[in-house]
Length: 286
Ligand SMILES: CC(C)(COP(=O)(O)OP(=O)(O)OC[C@H]1O[C@@H](n2cnc3c(N)ncnc32)[C@H](O)[C@@H]1OP(=O)(O)O)[C@@H](O)C(=O)NCCC(=O)NCCSC(=O)C[C@H](O)C(=O)O
Ligand SMILES: [Mg+2]
Image (cartoon, rainbow, N blue to C red; front, side, top):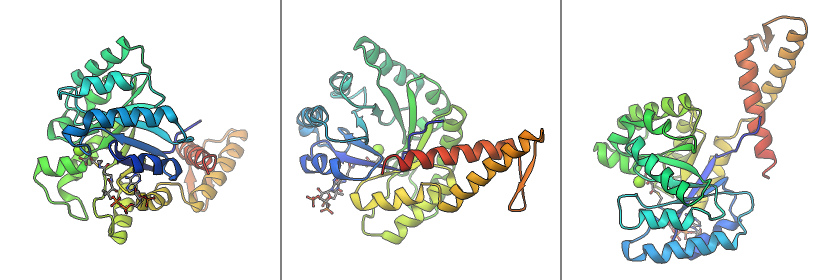
């Protein structure tokens, strides 16, 4: 089992040359080079060229590179997609996706361009959340769902509270759809860069909700996310013991075992294998 860790996924404005440079040395699992909302309209074309030059120059190591393009219905979306269709990146991130049809239109264009890029899809409008099942299933290129909680809060007209009560249904609907389609799913950004305690609590909440990682806006948010979204030492230790116990039970033609006084069945074995695989993938990054 090989898994890609996506604990920390850092956005940066494509118009910010310093951030594009700095990202080459940051310990984020993935980088989203943004051409959409972090770039002013009169900077769009220049940012596209700058991001293309940066990814072609390379130096990002094994960080997963993703470009967030502008919406297909904007003056820049189509040109963004064509520009990056065959660039040395892993995926395009599509903002504010609301239907499977939108995904299909992008896939058609990528096919015309001979591109194999994967797609990350942002859930950040009420319509997008309501249609998330068909969006997730629209194409086999789909790999990750990204919660756009800033836009979502605005559209839902809910405040940003620590418990995110007004967004819980949307978060959990998207979680269900992502998992039903075997996709990864990332939590939204935490806007208060200086609020360390609030941010740590938000990461913890993201873990409890089941997210694979968190989207970030500042380098200071990387290490806390890397810690929060990695299996803990206790989880890894227990995973190893579950695998050992399960394999011993299987050799005796049994379907159950007991570890630390708790029942272990095949589902726990599979869960343990996943924890170990993600741990090993993280270890191979550092
Ligand atoms: C928020 C910021 C504008 C703050 O920038 P700045 O004032 O430069 O911060 P610092 O001085 O503390 O920066 C310290 C050093 O770190 C580099 N830096 C800062 N941010 C980044 C970054 N995101 N990526 C890479 N490097 C970064 C600075 O250059 C400094 O480096 P050095 O020169 O060596 O000291 C800024 O952090 C920022 O622009 N953040 C990202 C904003 C963004 O991308 N927004 C779009 C995505 S969020 C979104 O759209 C959510 C979604 O769609 C939704 O709806 O929810
Ligand atoms: Mg947004």
